[in-house]
Length: 338
Image 1 (spheres, rainbow, N blue to C red):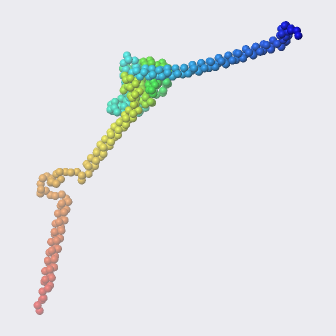
Image 2 (spheres, rainbow, N blue to C red):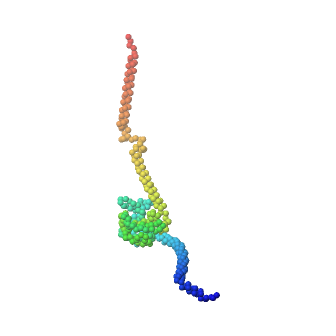
Image 3 (cartoon, rainbow, N blue to C red):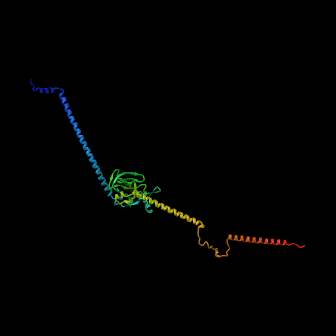
């Protein structure tokens, strides 16, 4: 049997000469390439997903830790601030209307009343005005965020700042406002200038300033030059309720005292009008007018004397008539001799 060394070569040559060989080869190679690309992409995507998840986890942990650190830092910064009056330190300003305090005396309470529309209203803040009556710059009493800027028909332009921990400050009767909502302001930043409003017209050019904790107004004068932490830790609601209770108790005591005085006055008037309840130490010793015991008695006594005299005369006349009757009877009883 003869061997043909070039037989295998001829065989491949015949295969290469086939029209379908190279297209099929290209298809197979393309399939391998596509499979390799898809596999590589899957591997890369899984790797990237794992990396993204790891990064997100690390980022969340980092944000939580940084958030804690930021909260602690913000708390320390805010609580280290001292509550100041909302005016420039160099401005010559004074408080013209005080916070209405139920426990204060009447003079102080009168300073905390605002007269508007023929009525008096209790002030929930303080009105600050310059000594010369002119306008002045209004500053942020504490660092915070501007939550509201509005124009009120009674209180004028209003700016509200939020300081966290349920603490807010309220600025009214302003003009030329220089902040807007969501602005971050630092203590001492200019918010605007003092102006006029309809409700506090008697205060002239001023700024109305309030401090509230948990939506309850507090006396700003008690916390000026005090730390923010002092305000946060204060039990404002209980103090407000006790002040109102003390004020109501004082008013009730005053009302009871007035009622007692009225009752006492009425009893005195009744005693004065009732002669039977009067006690006269000299009542037992009746004085005769003129000091003459022989002076004629009054009309009633004369009438009594006349009645007694009349009765005596009648008795005497009756006795005389009885005596005459007896004598007559005796005379009749004698017999006449024949």
